[in-house]
Image (cartoon, rainbow, N blue to C red):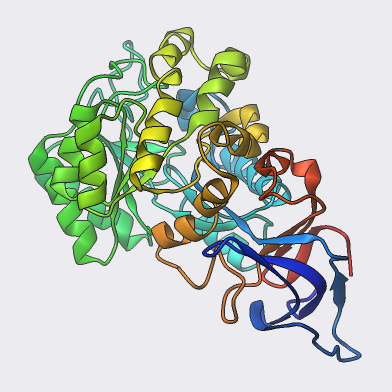
Length: 408
């Protein structure tokens, strides 16, 4: 494999305009350096013949948990770090094979996994990580059972979150994750499905705690995203200054207004509720958590449609756990029920790149961007559900290297 590559005879999609251009694309040192109708190939440059195939920028999933080898996150927290890492390596490789050349981990991944991928020790997507997601005692990120009393906050523990209370301790925890290279910070602002000790409709963290996290993140040039379902939890987090909301299934009209006023992002994760309802218990989800799924499942599409019609900035997210991660691409099919193909594609390309703060580098195939792309035989603008099955992705290229499919 090589980071220098000529992609020949491709129908290149520009997601900003929704138009295809039939052209060649030349990659050097992992970046796109030229896009033209016909590029002459040097004798020593490998050629990938797209044969008129549809070429999209590499896909971006903005809500994953690469450490989650099980649907029971308490099991993940208690497992040996070596075992959890082995599961993460497997998960990351599978994500890359599904066409996701970049992911944002919203709880658990750290600089070690990101560095290992960058140095070529493991294969997987580019990894934007937030470190440990922060939770109040008894909040969504507190995965203890009612019988457990001890909280182990050591940074080397394998869990996806950390329990922190009080504005000063939240500041300290945010600073610690930033010290370890976090690209964003995630706080649990409401109850959730996988936590055993709270209700989905609860609000979590005080305004002082939320504002402390936002202040520290912004001071470091980073941002805060929140796990939140009910409108009262989402709205107060947006008023505190958070830049992104995960899930948002129960949002209301005021939520949409605030998302637009603050130019904030929403990352729906609809596929995870279908997966949890259908097979969550087979993958370790506790019965008490499974019983909560229905509270958010039915409202997800309604919330997505409301936000989309209003013009809220939406990014692609899956939030799948354990063996359910194989369904990562199915989010395309679900969103297609209420959005146009181009809107769904933008969520996984240009919008996702904007959320990550890398517009022009990811989510596009213009000169200067990373040479990440996927090749399909069928037109996703005619039927975006072709992206819902990874088998329809003929080739995956990351950083100018063919990482899956047709070799050069």
